[in-house]
Length: 108
Length: 508
Image: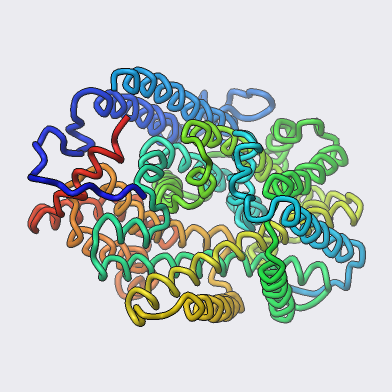
């Protein structure tokens, strides 16, 4: 671990770390990407189950009747596609961060 | 569990595989010596990914998920998604920053971030509890598979299995074996997928990619089962239960950042990040396959008229990957391959967990709290003693396992999600979090996790709101709220840790 540096005085508040108020520049951009990915992570995982639960009321809707690759659509989506989606999200995150790091390390 | 007689071939296979692991461990020790960690670069991103996956695979993945599918169909996918989606959360929110922070086990992180003996001891106790609970699930798997393989009753098989685990641990410890995790991953995934291909082929489904081939079997199952719908959503659990479990496992995974151990030791952070993509793919290979075992087993059960009253089904559920092979009629040696894979997965998880738990005790509790003047040797002795004590406690806990393998494991994840996840998340992303908040949060998280187990009898609503396996959907936000309120009411943390966070941890 790099040792915490001795602080001469209180840090100016714009250097604070807060997920909801990221400071401008690298951190703000990174947090923006993080929000985007978190949203698509949550919508695809929980949002889909929510929609599924709503349509389940009327037993046998489009999501459960459609067949894809041999599976009922809802099952294929959750059991197989979501894992692919997660891998893709990690891939996107890495691409974003690689690009950001390149930009901001050059400026240093 | 009734004993069925000794199975020679699977037992010999187990002996052979353990022998191979020990021999390759010896070989890599002599050729690379102590520079083993430094050679991480040579294995590349894919190799680190395989190491992450082999670290992760346990009896819960190998035996547990298929068992839950066998009982509850679609509900099992909450485990599949929870244990893969958690990696996304870990990667995008925490892993990179934790690596920069330089402390990645809970007690170390809490110690450096919050600088409070109480918080450190609390987090060490939680880490030990998680190890214990997680281990009980692994031991249940070991006991069941040993009882199948050697024709013993469950309890003697459990004792025999734990004796083998401990001897294996001691042997690899004294020989200084280094684990070849890439080899181990290859072994595990072959042990899981090859028998599945054989089962799919035997039953007449598309067997080259059984992960896709079982879709037709799933629809056949729905028609045979006559509407009880194993593939149907929410037939066995409400949407709330599904989402609560899934969310709990996700934040639990993110609250155990050392599952990415190799992420922090890889020389280059960029390689480390990309290796997670590979790791997730390798883990996916197992999780795409696990429900297929459950599907084939259930299908055979309906077709063959194998009796299944609920109690018998629950008793057999955690062995269902093996039963699927038997019921489909694949050769015994192939069924033995599955069993050996399960044991190897459980063994490596157990050894990792016992070492984590014991080092939390010997360093964070014994050395930092009880006897700060203890020598290195003394601490090693305490760690070894603690390993044995923990192993004993786990055996006692596993004699009457409190639930399915996957359920017991989920309790460990719920604990991590309710306590360690908020501590890491706020510790990294909000510099105002202080030690009072951390202590209050972890205490509340402990209470929430065990609330329904301890007080469910008096307050039945606790079972519905914070069920033991899925308490973090309600618990984690409550704990985070508690930490924020307490932190705001108490003095801010020292300026130097806030500067460290902003200048080092969150730097480009």
